[in-house]
Amino acid sequence: AAESINKIIAIVGRNTITQLDFEKAQERYKKIYKSGKSPYKGSNKTQVMDFLIAREIINITADEETIIVNEKRIEAEVERIMDNMGFT
Image (cartoon, rainbow, N blue to C red; front, side, top):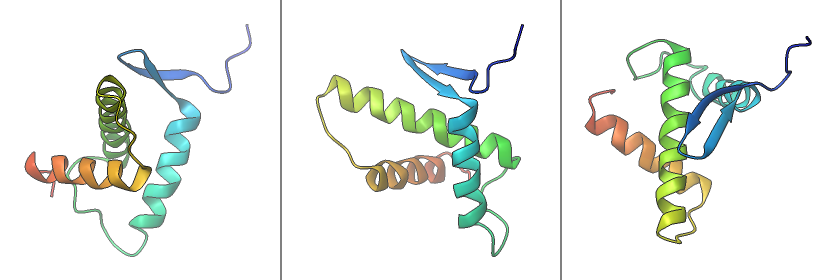
């Protein structure tokens, strides 16, 4: 059997996070922190997965509340949550 190119690596509610989603987020992460070390604890992969999961949770909540939120707002909220959890 051929391995899926874009396999599902996580499920958050009814939403999926695929390998392709992860790779895109990891590239963005590397660009953001190319000049130095990330302020977050944990491995690069863990931080990227945490971000993607938190983003999906925010999207689910926004859908339930019928709120439309842009990507920058989501990223800012994820960073705020991670700060509150001591990831800074």
